[in-house]
Image (cartoon, rainbow, N blue to C red; front, side):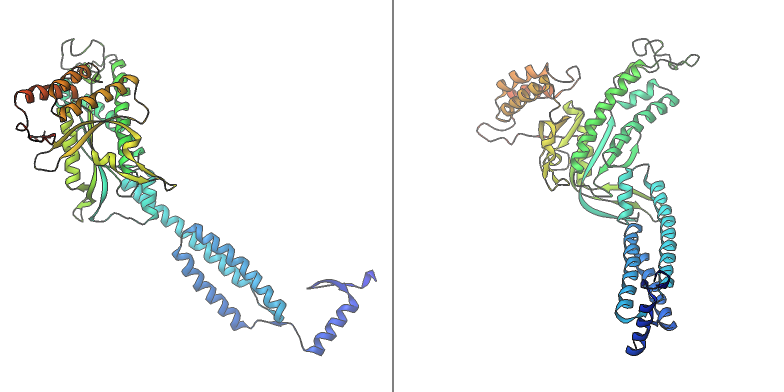
Length: 454
């Protein structure tokens, strides 16, 4: 019997069973049939056109899933048809058409997508974070002329007293210093997904929340501000330790020793460099402004103007990072749907309630110096006592306020500066004791009205 085993499409069986099955097929007229030529061609055409349309409109990852599902489904369908109707459909040409289309479309997509990404990176890499470029590509947000309104955060920085630097440095030295400063500061802004609007000399102007929207743009702007101030601390220490290169004296203008220590690479003014930062959150228009021939991605609106005023006005208050109340009050949700308020995540002290030139609506402004929980014990004491002084000031208790501000004057972080918040309030309290801001018996709104744009 071992010699009588036969191989059939349904497996091995005895020869007698093969004869019985053949006889049964003849009697029942249940013969195996093959799909006609026209059906095979129709299936190939349908698969070719259908899959080309599907693969062409989707990305490579989704196409991979569709390819696997369609490949397996073709096998299963042909098997079920064969089992139920004894109809053999030629699936190999269909499967080969599927493979050919998938490979061709994938190759084309990879090449074109890489080309588009390279274009975006070449266009935006100098002022956009890499993550935002990828987000722009995925959402197909290609650059075009026009603006988009929305709530965003404007960010302005400027080196304090920069004009003095140009008097003490050669043009070559000034460029070297600026390149190092601007490069490291811009990297910090981009790391927080900010967008570089432009450089204006030593000034850095940035946008948070555009062109690709990020919900926590106000908090990221605050983190960038804190990071920039700390980075400048590091740069000052680095510049202080740098020595001039042999045979290449740096003091080309022959400045006296009090201004430039012998052998030092940079004058003392560089060792003391400070940067002012102004931040404001609100409605603005962002987009590519200009002409179809030359576009510049920028921002416009009152929110932007106020941010610029805050940066300039920080000098008057003697602080280096001045932000509006709207930045701290801005709420956003994280990836888990949890709501946050930016002001709860940083250490800020109320500085003043002001109106800027050309505006009648008062704005509360704050100094931000650290992220939450990073204040020293001395800074915590300063913030607490300063807030008590401001409360007395707003209640027009000038003597009590003066007593507090005289104490905080010695506790200020930059107490040797010409201006500090405490010195400012001391001057005001002394002036208001002589000439009160309102008549006796009237209620004061506590608003200081700025008369210069700065």
